[in-house]
Amino acid sequence: MKIPTISIPITQIPLQKNIQLFLKREDLIHTHISGNKYWKLFYNINSYIDQNPANLFIITFGGAFSNHIAAVAALGKEFQLKTLGIIRGDELQDKWQENPTLKLAHQNGMDFRFVSREEYKNKEKLTQILEKEFPHALIIPEGGTNKDAVEGIKFMLTEETKRFDYLCSAVGTGGTIAGISKFAKENQKILGFKVVDDQSLYNKVSELSTKNNFELIEAHDGKYGKITDENIRFINDFKQKYRIQLDPIYTGKMMKKLFELIEEDYFPAGTKILAFHTGGLQGISGANELLKKQNRRLIDIN
Ligand SMILES: Cc1ncc(COP(=O)(O)O)c(C=O)c1O
Image 1 (spheres, rainbow, N blue to C red):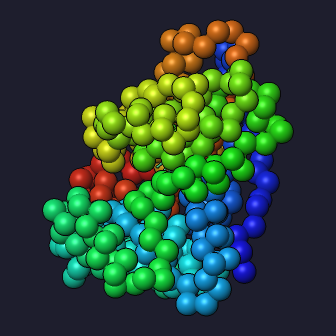
Image 2 (tube, rainbow, N blue to C red; image 1 turned 60 degrees about the horizontal axis):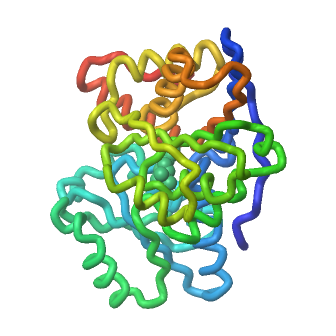
Image 3 (tube, helix red, strand yellow; image 1 turned 90 degrees about the vertical axis):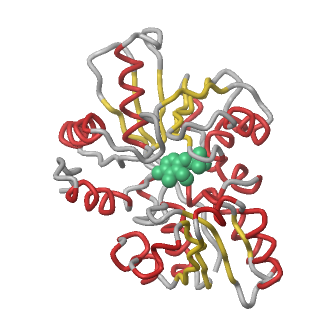
């Protein structure tokens, strides 16, 4: 069974200003294979299935709360593929059951190998070892970003998305925004909201996209994964007002920064903006557990 293409609704976010803002709800694809993950894995996995119809085995990398790990595990279950997650942090070896992302990934059939943070940094070496051990496996990089992933992002762009002046997405490893940039129409401007403080991202996106129609905007609050009280307030207010759940690591940060830009009149009157809701909602329960331990306000989920 191969991964099918799916069509996704676009919802308007009504604003008081003369700016039209819409969200493309890639988060609705699937609870755990949501948004950009689905499309980044689309060609990677389908071409692997074409080449290896038997003994399908997928290996990938991620941190303890990774949306990508959650997506690969859920995809494995859905499409009967064996999966192995190489997880950052050997301290998790004995307590991964306490982590909601890893617990669910395991329920979805994923096995784990925990590696030290030091070892994890050298993914090239880790990949070489894995290639020797599992010569028939498909090894997908952290965050799923590679050339096939960029190609898969073209399915996020449709006839309907052509009418927007700006296309926006959160940026982690850069594959999603590279795909949007590569497949956008010539007159469209692309804004990537960086949730990680990585200065090498511009060159990486540029290389993957082969275009320079994009701009990257800092939206990371200093560090990847940092959840400020303002982020939580914004996500909860947004949910109350528009009945749409955002996540605290990617889409919440993008929308908060996008609202600030709209407020500062960054966009000329009449601009039509489309932001992609790339999912990540599985990360909320893990985030709330951390917030609970810190006696802080939680992200509303009902
Ligand atoms: C919810 C969500 N949004 C956006 C991104 C950013 O995607 P990319 O890593 O391709 O930049 C990710 C990471 O895959 C993600 O999990």
